[in-house]
Structure formats: C-alpha cells, structure tokens
Image (cartoon, rainbow, N blue to C red; front, side, top):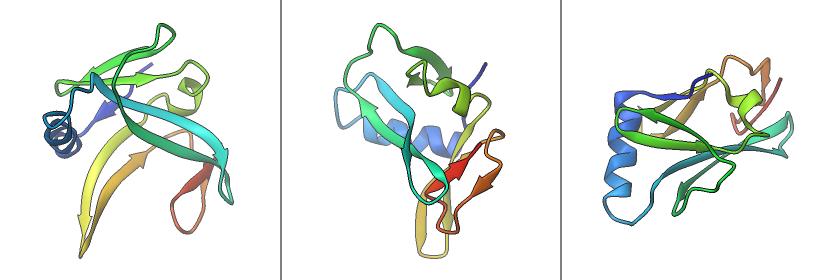
Length: 106
C-alpha cells in the first residue's frame, strides 16, 4: 500500500505547511459528485490514532482506514495548465471520472 506525492506537489505542500503548525496532509474520499466519490484534501493539525501514515518527499500523508482502499497507489501531483493550477490525483483505482474532474467511480 502506498500514497505518493510528486516533487511539485511536495514543494507546494511544504510551502503551505511552513505557514501553519500542521503535522501533514490528510487525504480522504467522500460520497459526492456525479460519479459517486470525491477527493477530500486538507491540512492535518493533528494525527488521529486510526490514521494510516505515509511519507513522500518529506511530507506526511494521513489517510483514514475507510478511504485507503480507494486511494491505494494514488500519486498526488501539482500541475499548472495555462492560467489554472491545482492538485491532480493520479488514482489507479478510478475507473470513471466526471467531466469536471471533481469526482470518480471505482
């Protein structure tokens, strides 16, 4: 089981973590969107006892056990496309994705 960040994503996360006292990045999935599931991404101020921890490029990634099967093998990237920039989930478990890229199905 693994969750990784690209160097671009890790640099972006480090820049935000330096401005606050967060312990890492929390990834999860929730039921939402037109395809069924949506990614949840936030900074974690504390680690919960049930969190599964991963380290990638010096960033601690925390995931709750229920989300892990849907996120296992995911690579988080930070991309710039024209005037837009943001995090992109490269999830091998996603079989379908909505047109806007906000939700997915497994």
